[in-house]
Amino acid sequence: MSFSQQQSNSLLPSFDFSDCEDKPSNLTGLNNQGATCYLNSMLQALFMLPELRREVFQWQCPLLSTITNIEQAKTLDLSRNIPYQLQKLFALLQETDRLSIPTTGLTKSFGWQEQVYQQSDVQELYTILLTALKENTLGSSLNETIQGLFWGEMTNYTECQTCYSSRLRRESFNNLHITVKGLSDLAQGFDKLLTPEIMSGHRNITINIERNER
Image 1: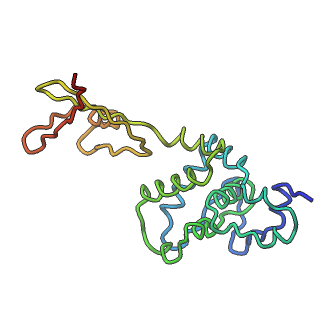
Image 2: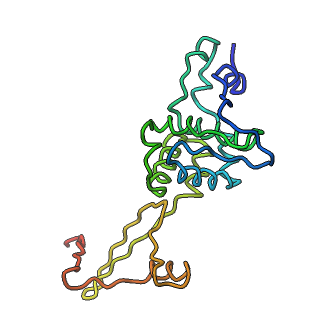
Image 3: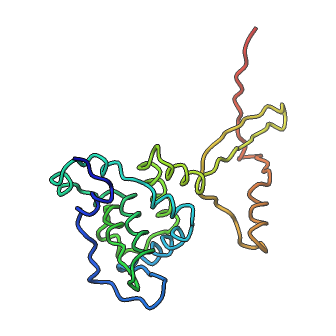
């Protein structure tokens, strides 16, 4: 006997709505566990991306495809599965008739306990969450979407002002550090980021060039 993902999900512990409030509109909020307002803001922003939301809903947890009987379903533990917990949270945000829902399932999948009472850096959490999603969804269209939406490639080009030897280094990134203080808009920040910089004096760097001897 085989079980579809929908059948498997029906065998898992149901979501507890006991700490949710009824909602009067079609918008759903996220409960603050103590100091998780930064987490809630990031999750709501991610939820509002149609491409990401669609792929999160369509993703199928590989562990669910291994279930062949009810006993296996009863013992399956997805509490530390970050993509599954995010999928569950997104589904509740879209389908529940409650005013707000808790994020405890997702934070427990991070291994958080006391951390929910500590204010943290949203950029650091953003990087941790996206990296975890990318590493745990390999081979899926969700993985491709995450990399396409949130990852890019930067090329650092270095050229010697004396011999004109050059070096290229490519590296991936999922956030950019852009200076905005003293600038009129974000576009100027991008321009400043891409402006060539001359390394001189104590900031000199050495370019090692491999040469083939004849």
